[in-house]
Every structure is written in C-alpha cells, then in structure tokens.
Image 1 (cartoon, one colour):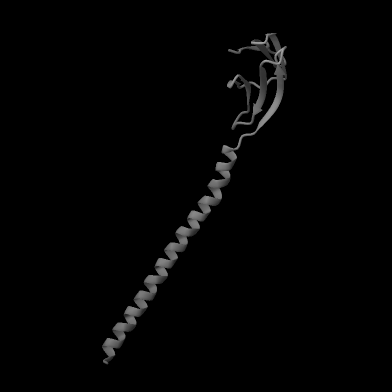
Image 2 (cartoon, helix red, strand yellow; image 1 turned 45 degrees about the vertical axis):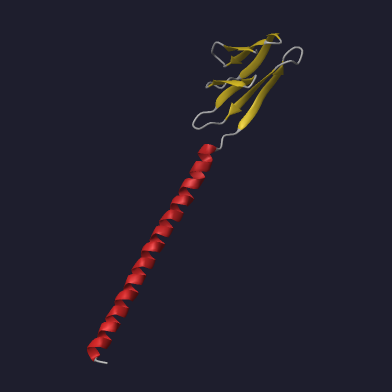
Length: 128
C-alpha cells in the first residue's frame, strides 16, 4: 500500500469520526431542548387544567323533590360560583359573602347572593 492511500483512509476515518461527533452533539442538543420544554410546559398545563370545586351550600326543596348545589370553582384567573340544579348550572363571577336559598315550592327557588355594600343578586331557579 502506498502512503497516499493510507493517508486517504486516515482522513476518511477522521472525517467520519468528526461527522459522528457532530450528529451526536446535534441529537443531544435537541434531546435537551425537548426535555426542557417538557419540564416547563407540563407543570403549566397541569396548573391551568386543574380547577377544584368547593361546595358552599346544598339546599333541598321542601319535600326533598329537587336539590340546588352551590359550588365555588377555582378557575384561572378568577374563581366563579356555579349554581347547579336539574343537570344544569348557572355561573356567577362575583363571589358573595352570604348565600341563601328560598324555596317557593318544590319546583321554584330563589338563590340570593349577598355581597357587603351591594344590592343582593337574586337568581331564579325553576325545575321542570
């Protein structure tokens, strides 16, 4: 074998070795970037998708025919009040200081949401 042929093989070997190092470096870089994005976005997604409900009041009609449930839902950025009845719900954005339910009969009720210093909000609920 000639010296020129041996040098050509060494150059090819060195070139292929550098090419492999470059591919490994690019692969590791993208792996670290993807891992970093997952570490950042998964907690953010979990934080925004999680919303807990706190039961504030449950009221039953005079003859226990129907039920009204009032819950506070911790939505982002502001919590809301949900009045749940008959597989329906009414959402209110103002969090009241006091909640009361006055039943007219087994199928009609008024939910009174009182906030200090304001007129009470009255939500009429009718069951079918």
